[in-house]
Amino acid sequence: MEGTVNEFAHGHGIRRCRYRGQPKTHLQHVLTAIAVNIERLSDRPATEEPSSPRPPTAFQTFLDQQGIPRSKSWRTLGT
View (cartoon, rainbow, N blue to C red):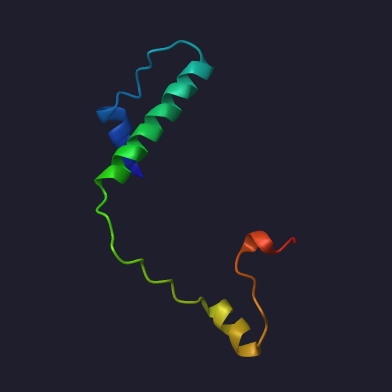
């Protein structure tokens, strides 16, 4: 986190804004963050194989041992 803040402050001049007013300043910060994210993503090497799934948590293992079905995502709990 501190490295990211340092990169914005020193590498992209986020402490000095080109515009006056909070809405335009906020827009500049958002666009700068998008540009930095695109730059970081373009520097990542392309992976040929998908990453392995995370191991189940202790709670998920308990649910599986008890035969209790668990939903795939927390977003589906209300449906």
